[in-house]
Length: 190
Image 1 (cartoon, rainbow, N blue to C red):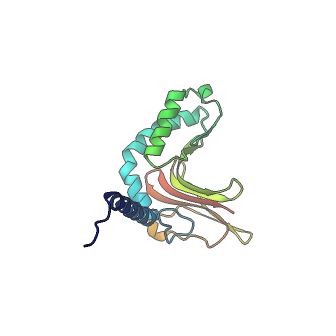
Image 2 (image 1 turned 90 degrees about the vertical axis):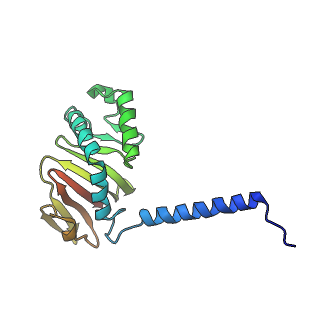
Image 3 (image 1 turned 180 degrees about the vertical axis):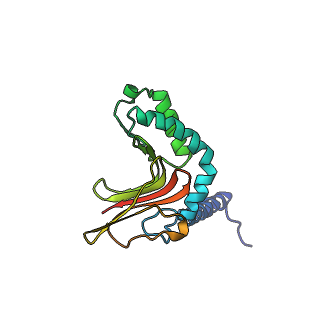
């Protein structure tokens, strides 16, 4: 007679199988796309934008007010300016914003200009070289910028995801119009 495996072994094997399946799912879902330097495909980013559109638009109204008062950056563990109370953001508001960023898979937060906000979905590299991608809200139309082989090329934003061309090397700033003043952005500093 064959001996039955102990219940503990069956449970352990089930957990291992679930972990492996989850890892395969995550690898597939967050796999590198065929677009150079991107974390998610542009189609995935547009889907993500449409899912979170209403939240992003409400958040954008609040952040534009703070940007005009001097907000430059909210990251997962630092801000610029260092003391946000100087511009009217208390710790409860900062905690609420960070929780909202994390719930929308934007743990790297936002970066603001006076009339623009970058919602950072992914970043990689060091402060000297690296890149990021996410969404840009900008009052003014951004300009695509490519810098390679000592030449500089500037173009209007790509009108749709089918028209995007990623450079093989060098720094670039790429913007793809989603709607109105909203863009997908993908930036890389070489």
